[in-house]
Length: 115
Image (cartoon, rainbow, N blue to C red):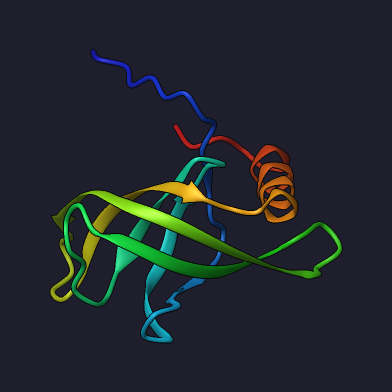
């Protein structure tokens, strides 16, 4: 059995979290899982391999407060999902401001890790 090793801890997203493309101001999908260095996007709009994206999503902290997170991201890979019209896409974060990065890091570390 092969075990996958990643540099950054990933956390599953417990409920649907829409992801917005800031250039088009449209929802392009939802978060699948998240780390401080990237994310799995369940895309409902077409995505382009090796493209750069400006994205926004919102997380909730332990008090239920909405935490907006804006990132610049590079689409590293994509693959068709089993659901027609959807694709899985792996994105690596290129830019994120310090305060949102700390919020994201705290959120990822507060929950169970993805296997």
